Length: 541
Image (cartoon, rainbow, N blue to C red; front, side, top):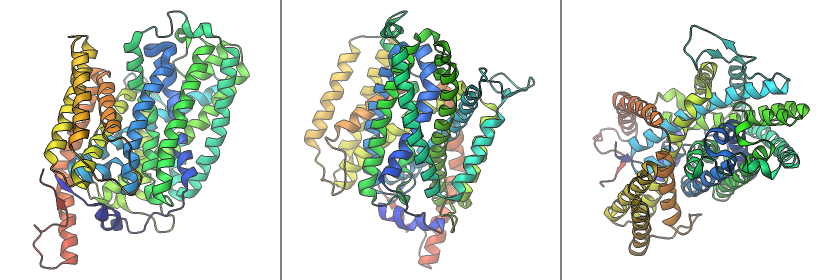
């Protein structure tokens, strides 16, 4: 469980298990388009309306800013890792290099869960907006109700299944062609967003932003609760980091692609949220297909149909990118033999992880057929926040303990104290207990971070690295913990069940399969060698 890999092993030995290599055809602008396309459709069209209606009111744009700052700091961490280890595994590979196999597997399994569930939810949202595009103002008009099934699972969505399967076949064919398709849709999408923003501000009024109960009718807590939910909107940039094996000049393209896409998306999110709340007061926003509903309320029926069609295309773009990323995650888990190895195979003629793409496409389509969006948004957010929290911890540990060859005890103690004080601050805020805990925990966090920066040195990196360390990663750790504590208890209960299931799978299958893979490779390369002399580098913490 504590076995770690070196970057050289991850880049060469493990990657060879896929047979053929993925083809390096993408450039920095492909990566920006993939990141922007992956995030935009999810955030604006899925979460903005419900969060404004139930949590943040007109200040939903502030929720997006808070979530965007947290996502930007996390994207710094991802970028440094992806430049140093340009493989398709994303958070799984980064954490396996740093904290060992089990932590990497746990993060990879959670990222996969997020991708599959969020893609299924977004596919169902595609059906809702498509109905508005054709002038049908009922979001369930193309769904089939089955009374024998339980509530929230009884509206069968066949258009959602069709779009998922169609995109799965497209992704099986070629990554470059899929990227070109996404680039075209993203350019159109940004122009289309410009139309919504300009139209929203033209027809809206500042009075709608502050009526009926002010800019933040649910208070500061509502804004922060909303920030935790809209964080769901930022998981697309993680897809960009999984394309590291298919990018030309990764050290230049990855920082531009990952960080640039987060910044562009955050600005568009804020403008879109403001335009929506300017058109109609927050308490009149439709929970389903919010933007189309807003244009209907101001009497622009033709614009409602246009928005429905444009939103549908935006959702297709975000689905395309997310499904691209989820297959690469599963492929790398297959390379590590944590899941069956046939999922790691790369097709020699197309250069794509064919088996992983087909398997996850079928899983996504199956869930999209039954499950309502409300069931899974918060569960997706908690998984995303946890993985980003782990990556920020891993960056600090790797920078100060592994690369700098410093004793790990000080770094581990700092990470423990930082997490504990962040949790103390967050709990004091959530339960409104012991007001003095906020300045106490906040001051302690600031002090220990400054003390750690002053006392523990690190070696400068030749490639791109996060500036002003350890502050960006430390703030990312705090924000991820804080936003997690704003979620409902039910989200933690569902997440705990999922965590138990993936841990059981690892204990019964994954750990044995990876050991046997190592034993087989050693037997092939060094006959007669004792299997205890593993190629895996063990770090004794």
